Amino acid sequence: MDRGDYILWQDPFSGEPRNLHYGRGERNQPAGTTFEFVAEQTSGSSPKFKVTDADGTKSKVKLGAESEPETVATRLVWAAGYATDEDSL
Image (cartoon, rainbow, N blue to C red; front, side, top):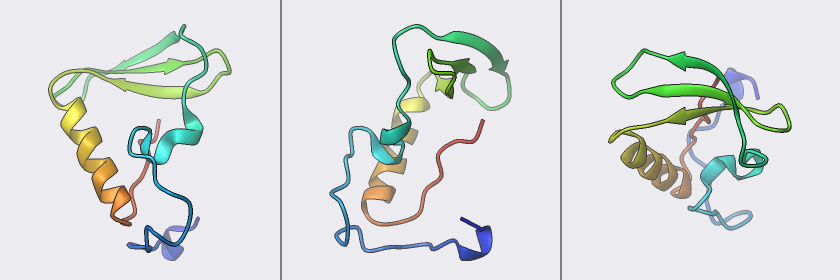
C-alpha cells in the first residue's frame, strides 16, 4: 500500500474477527523454535535482536519491561480499527 493511500481507521467489524493473541502479525509468525541471530539493535531503551527463522523470515525480538505493554497497546488500537504497522526490520 502506498503511504498516500494509507487509511487511519477502518470498521473493525466489517471483515474477519480480529485475534488479539497474535494481532496484526498473525500471518507472519516465526516457523519452528530455533532461530539464527542476525544482529543486536542497540538503539532505544530495551534490548532488541534481529533473528531469522527456519523459513528465512526475519523477526525482531524485544526484551525488557517495555515489550509487553507496547504489544498490548498496539493490539488494542488495531482491534479498535486504527491502522498499525508491523515493525520493519
